[in-house]
Length: 473
Image 1 (cartoon, rainbow, N blue to C red):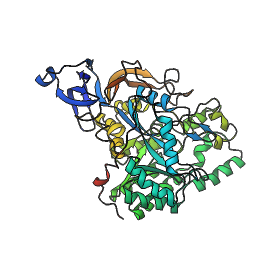
Image 2 (spheres, rainbow, N blue to C red):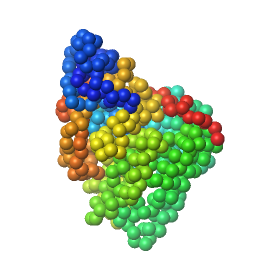
Image 3 (cartoon, rainbow, N blue to C red):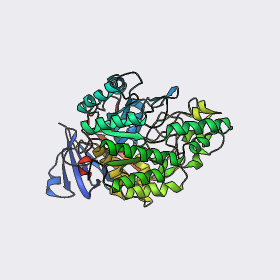
Image 4 (cartoon, rainbow, N blue to C red):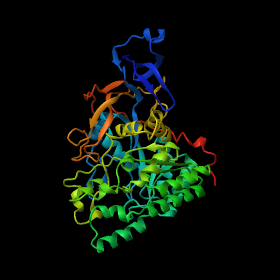
């Protein structure tokens, strides 16, 4: 059984910062011991990693990715192989991707299709959520079976009529089922029916540029849908997780629900923290690179989101990684913003961008690890196997150089997409070495991993629910 010692670093978790050496054995963390102690001095190892002057942090958990996702007549540009390799480069060692039920088909058929896409292709560990596109008696019964199998979260959409959209009755029924089987409902909260009216009106008036994608997907329609989702969850007595929160008014709805003791949780993404409608308005169709839903908002929303992360009104930062190349994919929407594939790349950049937020004073080091590693692991039933550095946990470990300087660029990133949403942005901090279950997959900025190393990881139910004051209105 191979043994690795990581010595000299500052171990940073969501709860502690300690100068400690870490012993890895058989793919798991075997022990921690303070530098220079007799316990650490007695360790023998096949490999020793010097982390002097570096952080030793848990591998990131990105709980919202879309590898190979079909959308708008095309597919997300990253495969499970390219996307998980890029994730590893960025210090993420577990993703939770979305399997998709097609209308008229079973959940099982959709889940099996995603198992097949990922099997043998992933560089890091992975799990699945299930998108419910067709809520009916049969799919509701299947939810119970999936929870028992370790697929314990289900995403519904208040947006995209005719594709993923569920009406309030379908949403309520799914929430009631989740209340009984322990599943967690994830919600894309935008009023898609109203948005479609505004899209039609904008196009008829000749407003076709990418910036109008943000104009029609109004803050009020995100806030209204967030409020409605929360009230439906109250009626059902179910927990609720709002994905990709982008606007201050939507965040206020989540904060109010949590103040009442309701089991309501929120996620935001780096694009809403670092980008804005200024990017959507870039000339010569460049704004198409930044089309995603929920859309980018004016910069003044960023302060509210950072405050929400500090106050635990938002618990998780995921990427919603769903990349489409500018050439040949985003360009499908020239002359009609509604045909631009919705999605942006980011799985490689999340950990570094959030470290920059530490440098800039938005969040603390421990909060960085909490929102990027520990909280997503707890939220989706992976903790403490994932998301922390503690005896018994998987040895998903990142050696992070907090002083390194880097410039983000499509020329140097590893995502399978022809642009970077953060092109030219200078950051302080960079991933140096990454271990996935004890195996070195990034070795001092060299990729040493392989497709097929990553394992499917079944999940328990949400580990925050027993902390909620009440699950009933």
